Image (cartoon, rainbow, N blue to C red):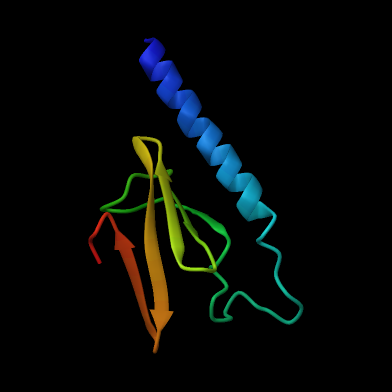
Length: 96
């Protein structure tokens, strides 16, 4: 029981820390629209429906290429992402 509580508190603390950092970075620049390239960067994205990802999973695409992923059912993870020549690629747990 204590392990579960510790795990839950650790995950919650991570999500709060990530949210604080990223909400402070998510302001749009003047003239930027939702359709602008890169408008998904430095924003916390929550999965609501998916056939392959648990609802509630959070994705954050940091501007320097780091991908932060956290889920209610697993430990937080880091990955990489890039958008080059019109192609978007995520590297998550060694899988592109």
